[in-house]
Amino acid sequence: MSDRPLPPLSTLQAFCAIAETGGFGRAAERLGLTQTAISHQIAQLEGWMGGRLFERGRHGARLSPLGLKLQPEISAALTALETVLHHGRAASASPSLVIATTPEFSSQWLAPRLESFCRRYPKIEVRTAVAYQRPDFASVDLAIWLGRGGPDLVTEPLLLDDEFVVCAPELSRRLPSRGAIRAAPLLLYRGMRHTVLDWQRWYEQIGGDPKAGELAGFDIVAAVRDAQVFDAFEEMLEACGRGEGFALVRSSLVGADLDSGKLVRCFVEQQPAALNYAMLYPAGALEKSSVALFRKWLVGETGQEQFRR
Image (cartoon, rainbow, N blue to C red; front, side):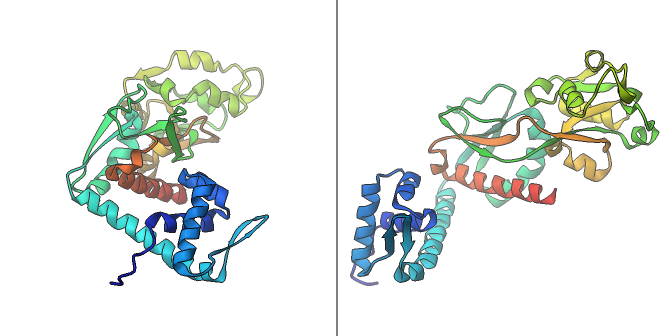
């Protein structure tokens, strides 16, 4: 190795941040530094390199020919270094990870996929906290929740859901061409208010008018009041699969049941969900390697699902 010391890592991070954002001010904001500190770091790096890395102008900072030559390899080297360090940190101990989410998301989406994360990172001890109460981040590393967190939390959107009605294939085949919503009871579960799956909102969004059309005389309020209520989302889906009625669901929770043919979409109407699942975690949580690795895995899993749709 050369006797000449390498430039500090912070100068390389500043260089990449400016190249990616196009300005010293935006790079400073991304890195949580002052613009003056960023300027000093680039001056230090340019002194080490012996040439200018950026051309400054009124519209921001552009890479110089030297900067253009260096940027791809420096960026790739920093990414590789980050990956190696995260893996090394994860392998150096038996890190833990506590994930909080709702019962239906845990059973229908997370649990079937979590095994792949555990196989990839067998030394990470994963625990899930399943409840409808808002998570306590004193004991939780990361939550998968509907909507945004508070001002002290980072919120990263995960899934964009649609809401629609499903039933058993046999029931679907027997539905009349008009007024089909009257052909079977509505089904609910006790966590429904927490998941914002609201029959009345769905009915109004699809243009249900109790005074006109084929749904004249259909009382959605009475239908919801008389609906059969189950203790859990899975129990409601089981009853739905047995042909006992209609269930209003969000797309992320019934993919496997639709793929297997256990359930079918029985009406063409659907609407975007009022709230969607997001990752919530405290600022600085990604400094814990197990959280950073889980976040990266989760983004990959949800990205594949969005693409599949």
